[in-house]
Image 1 (tube, rainbow, N blue to C red):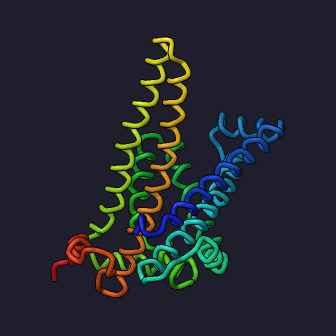
Image 2: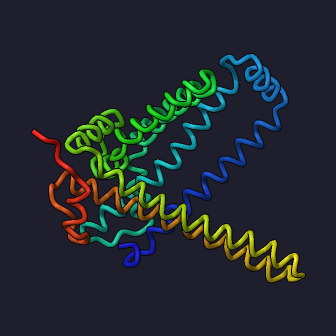
Length: 269
């Protein structure tokens, strides 16, 4: 599917550019305000709620909004592709803009959850990190289909979360393994490319071939960026396929039927 429509790679690229720009903007704004930096440092040293938590909340919400917005466009395009359409970047972005209210609402909910989990991890030590990991995994599982639901159905964020949970309750949740598999394979390839790039650069630099080493390093960075884009697009296609199967009860025509069915295990009655 990705080979048939490379336009799916454009949306994660736009998402990456937008999140990078936001990160730089937030960092520049914080560093330009000495009072804010001092208050943040004081709240950190006293281990109390303060400007740091307010900044973290704003950061989470804005970051989540941008990521969810582009993911909605990406998954919407993947759903259209599954149904035999030829979605364009413009059409996908138009769909995301039409869902901007639910996307913002879900970003606020996800941002609140993120700040709460981070606060627990920071203030309760090992116990807090265990709670964060457990609740974070449960939240990820419960909201796995939220973005496809937002893209396809356009319902509110709370209803989307409830519907995602209801759809996943029909199975043991083995469908999540596919997404983990994509991330794992992408991480392994990225690690190999990064090792070759960094190691080759240092070796060639020692051997007095700095230009070749620099070229190898730049090529590895470009390859890493491409891997990130491909992994994001594949995850969106997979989420769209899982949503299609959860709702329609049959695999998309573009997928191997046994492969999709085997991703689900019905609960014993």
